[in-house]
Image (tube, rainbow, N blue to C red):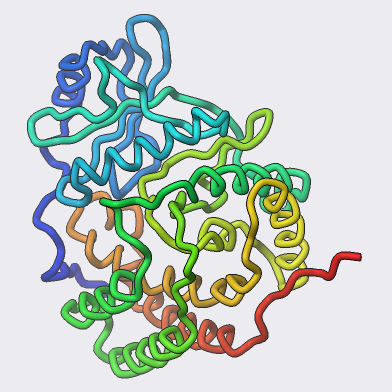
Length: 335
């Protein structure tokens, strides 16, 4: 039988006080009246709701998780999305109300976005991949103009060492798995340390550019820059690759050929794809552990507290260690 656990490093904050009434009054405080109910959208780190205002316009309001980002870090994200929008890049940028994009109400920071619809980007549709590659090239061309100052840069500390410490201080891992779990985790970390190189051309990134954060309308629409940070360009590309090695190579060819119409890409960054996958794997496990006392997490991720999940993570570590030994994916030669 699964047990309920809480990481000792998990923040005490949760969203219990974020009631519908509080959200309604928060919106009213900036002159926006919600005429419909607030429909919860798929978000766990923050709380995100769609609604219709008194003029029948649809909006999305995001309430940030307190103590995660500072106001300065949030405003850098907002400025980046506005920079992109000013260059005619399809990104959902915050609404400016009374000259501000970031608002505060009773301990919460929140932001308003226009609500946009669309289908999900199809990773196996090469025509769509070409469009996405072209716009990623344009995004990164703008991103290269200056780095984030307030937001962090991708690092082994944030993605490996802090998660390793958090997991070692928690009681999530079943006792019979602890030895093999931490042994394989430490082998993976050692491999990642050997292969990780911080590129010289660090740029501002979307940071979480997976297919779920790209809507398809008449073309791609990029959403949710909440994880924006400095890092290597390949971070915004590798999560768009899907399937076996041949499929990924074809998709990468299409994306980077279109990308290169607008922005140079250093092919040496291709060797970071599997290390970045390893970093994301470790970081994701620790993120779930860190947030477990938020009531939304046990509901959304009930499998996290099951022994089978942790057995699969040990297997996943072994598979990723093996993937790190394989030759780097390479582009098809152009003739």
